[in-house]
Length: 449
Image 1 (spheres, rainbow, N blue to C red):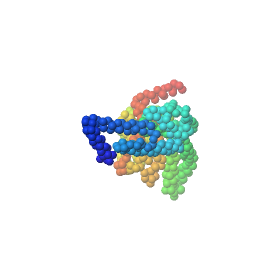
Image 2 (cartoon, one colour):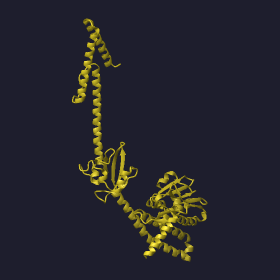
Image 3 (cartoon, one colour):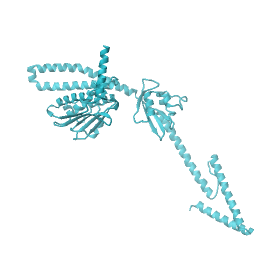
Image 4 (tube, rainbow, N blue to C red):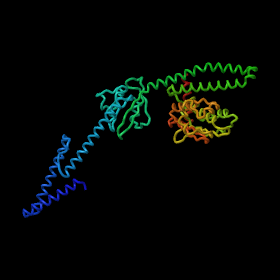
């Protein structure tokens, strides 16, 4: 037992003894004990009153003076008060620092109230980029102030994994990347970052690539013409056959790079076309497979098809050809002679899927996330020897993005690779319906003409 409780037991024992003595003198021990008990109870009630008054008023910093167990109670409560006051001071300092930090953030930050779209707080950047004003917009629903369809869909969808882009309501020339971050269970932060400078740099890069590619076409055409003339000259061709062949190969390779750069620049800069038409994918794959067999040549790859001839896709045929041919031709380039390549076009999991499987050299896992980057090469020497430009998978990625599709890559070193293109179900069509639609379009055009 602690000392206060020992003292209290001694106090009780003393009071009991005093009650017995008083009762003995008065001739009634019970009466004496009852009198002592009343006095002891009154003492406790008095200290309870002092405790309640101290806690209620909260003005006195020091606890009331007391004796016995109540002195220990007052002391413990006083220490708890001190710790609580210290915690509150620390919390206030932390909150002040937090608000200073968020106010200083370059990104617009808006705090929403629990389980609500109402605005509770925002920083200076939010006022600058989103046009919020205090006190006018305090307590307003954020959906009433930010009415861009992309943001409203993102806000009400509840899936905040991916951010959305939208123009600033203050200045349409400013592009914002908006992300919603849930925290503390039922609270949310809306964070908007200015992407205008990044977009301008990206546009400058795209324009530079497009302009350089376009300007390179003319000198490459001239070089190709002169090389053909020199190779047709018997005397020169006989003496410099190896040099001319090497020059021709490198000129052809540079022409392919320029063509791929121009195609990639167009895919990145142009908005997806709205005039998609039904594409006979089976026929397109058959044409690509024939070209792949020619590219294989002496390597004699086994190229097998597993194609649903009645499965068509609403898309842009030229872009599909670029994506599918790059995947198939890459499989031919990176599969050893005599290897197997399987091209599939089937419905899987309710969506149309195009896949290319090979028995080639495979790809280490750490390379896979970067395969769709421009000019990224797993083995630079092998890629150049095979005639690849390093842009094929970047083209595939952008074509699929324009068709709302996804690229899946599965590969292991020395065990081959599988590239799958998953298209959305709403683009799927049966070829019989597609043929009827095309016939109707042709008839309508003929009647108009």
